[in-house]
Amino acid sequence: KRMLAYSSIAHAGYILVGLTGGTATAASSAIFYLFSYAFMNIGAFAVIIMLEKAGEDDALQNRAAGIGKRFPMLALVMAIFMFSLTGIPPLAGFFGKLFVFKAAVDGGYAWLAVIAMLNSAVAAYYYLRVTVAMYFEEPTSESAETQRGWRTLNVGLAVAAIFTIAIGLYPGLWTGLFQGGIAAFGG
Image 1 (spheres, rainbow, N blue to C red):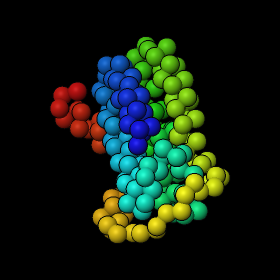
Image 2 (image 1 turned 30 degrees about the horizontal axis):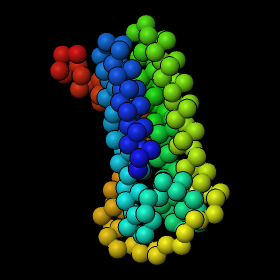
Image 3 (image 1 turned 180 degrees about the horizontal axis):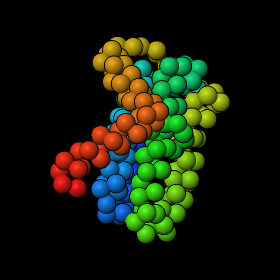
Image 4 (image 1 turned 45 degrees about the horizontal axis):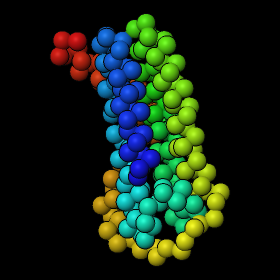
């Protein structure tokens, strides 16, 4: 949880990088990133909550070791969220970062986009480390695989995963909606 919370600062920075362009397209890229990030992050936190309910004290604190063996579906959706937060195509996070970095470059802030990309590369290490631990490390503890209270979280998790994938597969649909909204407000 702590890693995701701290990474929120970087993601807020990416949104601001997108806004530096100062155009309606730049604003649309920032909204796209925020929209994408909401699904990725809510999904990742939902996985953590589900793991905690299953007896994992803090799933990411122990680097998520062995979760892929104990909870294969949770590990799969967490991998989707981690890959998207990293910015791996064709997921939502990739296009979100692409659009905000392009908006910065188009606005004359290429240096800022380069710094943001370097920061993104450093963050990739932490996100991908979680995924590697889920699938390639042995579990650190045995957990009671209870699933009480998971139904509501499963629905939210499914919605977050579907949107994380759909936003990445159809980015033009979403940017068109956001650009239309900005135009309607006089942007």
